[in-house]
Length: 251
Image 1 (tube, rainbow, N blue to C red):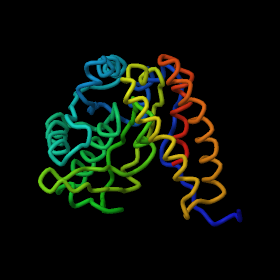
Image 2 (cartoon, rainbow, N blue to C red):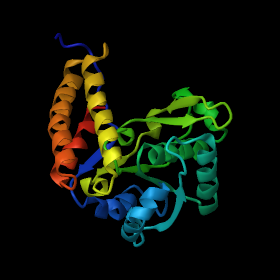
Image 3 (cartoon, rainbow, N blue to C red):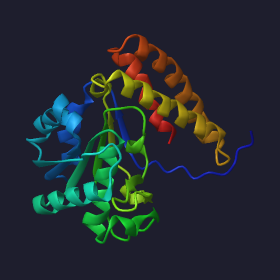
């Protein structure tokens, strides 16, 4: 293919490796965070990952956590998160979990820093003021929310899904720790694995692809294809689960 024009501007620092969750305190401090809001969901709380994250944060900043209750976050989830963040006076947000937790964290960030309602940010580039730094820590390998600047939020009344995107909403840091994906139920592993494969394919066939993005697409698909098969045969293997995570670099 010809070398089409492109403008590649990575916004998110990627930190990959087993046990890298332990760096969250250091990274939060490096971003100037002194009061960290951890946004997660009941399953992640039950798995003990929130407690682990808080233990690494506690020496670096004061910590509070909010919980996203739904698989697909709604305007109600975002509003509840904003209320906690305002009361706590959070200066950094950590999204820990699947896409719903990370999207709730982004949605909260829009309103907390720019005011209004999440509906005001439906579209692209609607935020006019700076936003708080976000650290995104995925516990699945499907959505890739940690590496892109959109939050997908459902209107609690109309149930319309709103894609709210802004370059300022992208996470400053994404921690890709495959140890956090081991506790996934088998069905979630399969579904998010298919999601990852689909994203690699989408970036390969889109009309907006370019020579640079195609490199990521091919390598992302190669890793996913190998890792997906292995992680479903040997459910606890961290190496195979790790292969499913770096494909997020194709975003």
